[in-house]
Image 1 (cartoon, rainbow, N blue to C red):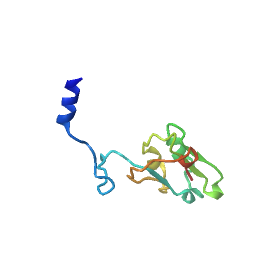
Image 2 (tube, rainbow, N blue to C red):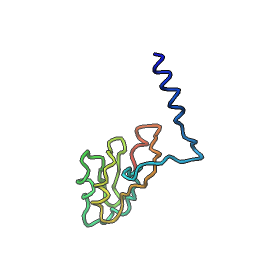
Image 3 (cartoon, helix red, strand yellow):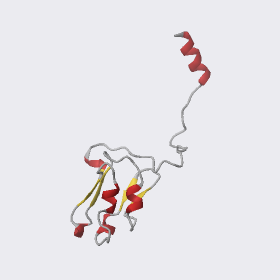
Length: 109
């Protein structure tokens, strides 16, 4: 037990001066996705983004209303859906803030 305490004291503190200093994330981190469902209204490859999602996190609805929803609770944050979307209706922002207060708040429309 004493060895663990000594090791912890040697390590020092590992905190970040948040929010004055933003976290530095790796380049491969895509961040929070953002969608613009109105770009899907008359998309020539409608459904390509949903087909590219391996976990069915993207659902398509009525094309007249935009009809795109992205469930962050299911999303693995792979970027294949954004790459498959020819109009850029799905894009990853690099934002690290992903918290939600309810399950419904995880669905982007």
